[in-house]
Amino acid sequence: MNLHDVVRLLGLTVPTSAEGQASGQVVPGDFELLLRAVPAGVVAGSVILNRADVPVRSVKDFAAEAELRLGDMREALTSREQALPASLHPEPGGLVPWGRTARDGVLLWDASAPDTEDWTTVLADKDFQLWLDLPVSVPEFLARALMAREEGTPAFESFEEYESGSFWKVADDMRATAMAMANPDFRAVEELVTKLRALGVPGVREYAKERVTRALELARESSLAYPEEYLAVMREFPGGVIAGMQVFPVDRVGWLTEDPVFLQWGESEGRAFGWLALGGDPGEWRVAYVEPDGTSLTHLRDQTFASFLRRRLRGDDSLF
Image 1 (cartoon, helix red, strand yellow):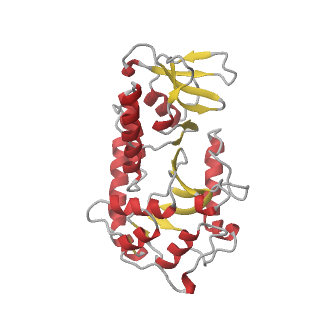
Image 2: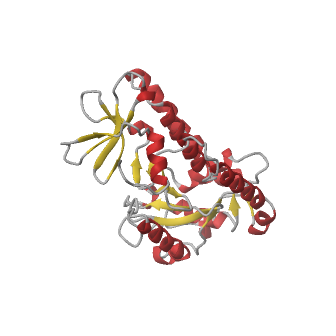
Image 3: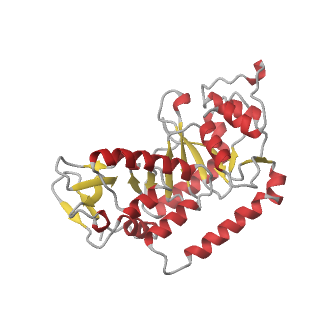
C-alpha cells in the first residue's frame, strides 16, 4: 500500500505538477506529497498529520509543533524511571514526530535508517507506556486505518466536521474504556487487551493479527506453541514496548538455547525475559528471566505473561 492508495481511499488525487514534487531529503517524500494532497483535518476519525510547508527544509522546524508533547514524554518516563525506547530528534537517527491520534497518542518515525524512504512508524499511547513498532510507511499506516475504519466513520473530516461528528464517538469510546478499566474483576489479559484497543487507530489490530497468523503457520511446522493469553495480547500488539519492557513481535519469539527450555519473548535492561517451558501445556508456563551474563535464571512462578505486564503498567517495576 502506498500514497496512491491513500489518496484513492480519500477521493483525492496525487499532485502531478512541479508544485507537487517532493524532495524526501529531510522527511520521506511520500509524506510531503500527502501534505500537498490532504487538507488539514482528521483521517479515519483517528489520525492527524503534522502540517508544514513543503518541501520540508528542517526537521527541527517540522518537529517544533510537537515539542511540548515530547517534553511531556520525557517527564512521564523519567517519573517512572523508564528510558525512551529509542533516542529522540535531534539526536542522530532519533524518533521524529509526524502526527498524533485523536486520543492524544503520538505518531513518530523510526528515523534510524539513513534513507528517509525507509523510515517506519512508531505509535505511542497518551501515557507513553505502550509503544508499537509498525514497520510500515506513513501512507501504508493511513491506508490500513482507512480500510479498517468502522462503518459510519468518514474517511476524512475537517476539524470543524470532526468536532461535530466523530469526536463524540471517540469521547463515548474513551468513556466506555474508562468504565471497563474500573472493573476490579478484570483479568490481566483482558486489561491489556482493553488498553491496546483504546489506542483507537483502525488497522493496528488487523496488522497485529496478520503477524500472529503467519507466526502460527510457522509454529505448526516446528511444533512451537504459545500460551493462549499471550496470543490474545499479540493479536492487538505487533511488537514494541509495554511499560518499559521490550516485547518482541510474535514472529521473533524463540528458544534462547538449543534445548527447548527457555522461550524468550522480550528483554529489559539486558535481561532476557520469556517462559520456563516446564511441561507440555503452554497455559501452565510462567515468566522467567536470565541475567545479562547468562549465569542466573530466575523463575517467577506466580507470574504469567499478562499478569507480569499488567503489574508493570500499574507502576510496579519490581521483578518479584
